[in-house]
Amino acid sequence: MNRSVITIDDLTNDEIDRLFNLADRYVSDLGEHPHSHRLLGKLDVAKGKIASTLFFEPSTRTKFSFEAAMFRLGGDILQTVDPRTNSSSKGESLADMVRVVQSYADLVILRHPREGAARVAAEYVDVPVINAGDGSHEHPTQTLCDLYTLRRERKSLTGLNVLLCGDLKNGRTVHSLVYALARFGARIVTAPAKGLELPPHVSDRLQSEYHCVALTSKDIALPDDVDMVFVPLRDEKIRGLPDNVDVLYVTPNQPHKLALIPDFNLSVHFDTVTTAVKEIDVIYGTRLQTERLAGNSGTGDYPVIDKAFLDKRGYTNAQVLHPLPRVKELGYDLDKDPRGAYFKQTAYGVPVRMALLAALLQIEPVLETRGSETHYFRNYSCDDGLMCSNERCISRDENEGKHLKPKFWIVNPAQQSFLPEMPLTVRCMYCEYDYKPSAIGRKSSRQYNVETSLWDQIESEDLVVFCDFAQAQHQGYNLVDPSVLTSARG
Ligand code: CP
Image (cartoon, rainbow, N blue to C red; front, side, top):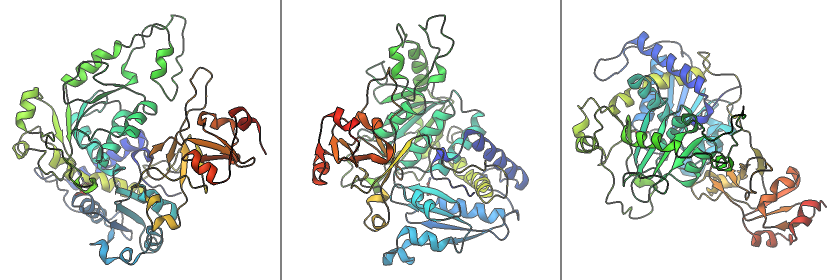
């Protein structure tokens, strides 16, 4: 079965390690220029293979480094230079276009302004799809370049203190990166431009699914520009547990549930957090994503990373990364400073993407043979009018909406007797936005209620989810008591 890489979670930590070992091997086999880190020469392992680069947004690094990677593997590239020169400008849907392109190429590399576009492409083709950036959602191969740079510069990701600056709301590189950092055990300190904080669906997910403890200035004194600190739970020694406890079962919605443990001492986190903020190992800057902003951005006090900033903070040995392009937020005075690692980061894109292409084209046995999707949530697919709440989602695109049916995961943990009941939360399968609908019902009895926490008492095939009660009523559903709804299968 072909694998695709749509989000960073489509690769396990072991697979990422193996990809990096393969990238190291390519660097060693080909050699690299000592200053630019450009690889030298080419292999012929991908002879006869073609990759297509479908880019509906501008790119220098991602497009060229994928194309260079394919050339250096000995394969070929089919490319769009300008989306206006392909048939999307005549109204062709993305789904149709990728179905056609798979007849010509063995792999599709897609960049698209709509969030979830790469997931749609992967659903329609049999060849591997690589997400080269979909709106503000994710940019998983940039994260591979970021992690590979850190591995070469810092040896290990575990325990690194990483400061993220800039537009954390719209920057897709940041969204893939934070999940990976959490998975590899790094601590994340966010210093966003005002109003451009990590979106709640990302920061909530770091806590509920990536086992991070999140602290803000409400919990602990933080520098003015720091918004949140995420510390992997594995860093913490759990104090206050009775001696006779052998096993601590951490629910998917930990760590808040630790508060249910009598005398649990949260202050254990504070030392780690204070250290994480003071002893920064990596500073990751991002530019203001003007292409995602409606109208005037109004961010006059955008954080600038330059020598003065590093010196003022005492970040003597910190590494500065940036996915580039830069605008005003990254000082040119760091270009020759040993702390500036961003041009190495772009150069490493070639061996990293060579490794990924070789893995997905099954030239090298790096990836497991399982499918790329390993989901543990119940799914919910609908024809009742529940739409994704994210207007930038591919499912909200007028053209793609003609063939796409909204699909969701129900992301609530299975109800546990000791957990408070939580309202239903659904996640769009394309763009991964979370949304709390305000009514649920039974198809069989055509009854509904606004008590959405009862969702798991209704059989999957009978459950219907509404944006709000008006939608339920419009569809002819009758309001009933919660007890009637949960018992009254029609
Ligand atoms: N980092 C990155 O995605 O750069 P490009 O937009 O130039 O591809």
